Image (tube, rainbow, N blue to C red):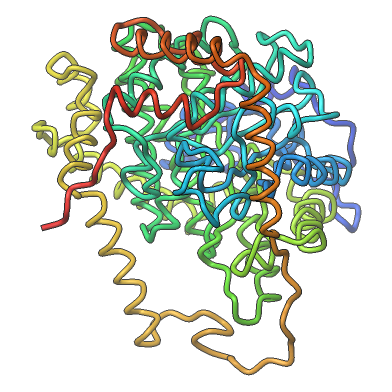
Length: 575
């Protein structure tokens, strides 16, 4: 890009910045030096990279979605939390909100994640241990008691039974008197990553995609601020992928959901703003910053050039970040505070929209109150003491960061080609292939490739090879983990950890029995029958499931009715 084009871009940015809302804050260094809101090439100097880098708030959004960066709005502190029963988790939420948290992020226990009731045999010993137990809308009432759902954004990390859980959340909001059209938050819902990495599915892929399409259509019409899909790379990275694989597989999943919306006749400019993303912030600082910048650029280009998005909001990639749980160690756990701070800084330097920081004890148990507070304060220190919110994309223009951003983008594009080839489409440019092949596939060419890759175990094999390579590097001394592969002597002592009592399971099951005895069971049976009828036809399933949630049908009953109709998915054995 020549000097004149760069000057024109700077002028465009300056006009947008001047008209944008800014925080009333001191934007100087600790020593009092004034800093500019953004930096670029010196005046009169050409830079061929600027076409890819651009300016904050302008396509392709490499440098962020907003011209102000964090001078306009800082990231949301959204701590992921849930354990035991609804009352215990409610207390933790109130503590987090009172200590500076800006939104809620719900962690569910394993039975809930698998669509099972707490009193089912498969749930024995797991109730409340890795998250909160939710069996019916009454638990949602207790979970958010004293927390107005109309005034707080709520993220829920669940995919297989996401729709029934979402309907329980809606029913709880109704009982609070909230206008559902005003709700704001995010539901994970991303079923592709379950088959690729996390393995918490219920049904075969096609019924899950139907539920997701129904949810997208329902939210676009009735709850426009709510984001029905958080496309998750976090679990892909935690399973052992590289940064480029995390980026490529996650964005490909996102493209698939765009194809799903388009196949339903939805307007991409209406539903695409309801898609958000969830990434891992790992320990390699510069690689993570580059990954986030490449993600925005790739998504914007594909949404505009392949899927026809015309508005800025439809081209934006908004993302939540969680620091890398897999990077934490049980050995010398206080080192985890440092790891988390570095990873959180990478997320911020990469322009995350919201952030969760892991606690130092999460390799051993769910966080104690003290560990949770340290994790929360880590974000406050970064936000309020370091000056990182003063300048948009402060690493933009770095020779290293820009080269790494380009390299990760190129690796992701190559993986897109491989995914399309799984679906029978070949060529040299992934975006061109996807655009030209759209009419040859029931949902779309990326979706076809993903489904084939899931069935053939291609994604699993790719991630497993990357994980094996890293493990081999640890064992031969090429890579290091402090306190594990080196510097193993320590003066620190064991931590006191949070333990979930078995009384939680007994109490939850007793409540569930009382709830079943006290509800209108005939109404529940009618509601479940309506769900099955809708599942056999083409009607949108959200209203029937919402009606079941209103009459206290349990999660296991709703999912069980659909399991009987659609069957359960069994992963093919690797050959």
